[in-house]
Length: 117
Image (cartoon, rainbow, N blue to C red):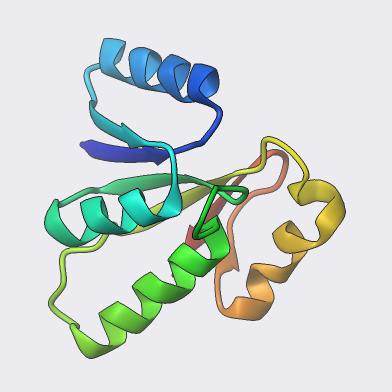
């Protein structure tokens, strides 16, 4: 399984990468939404681990962009699943709660939310 982690907190991101690689997963990482979009449009991933609070393009904007791309490119090789990492202010600013309103289906709660776009 190939995973892309998008998390701007470098220590957390590096810990996730190291842990997942030790478990045998193939993992790439980037620290902002614009870089993530570049990776997602050029590489094939099975899972996207995405922080909502990112410099530049935030996580929700990235999901919106990917959904629009997929609607005009139905054979695009985008990840089948996305886990939203709520590591900071997402709890208090309403972004976590707005995800279902934007068409993302939640599958679990707590600080990691799994969405199907």
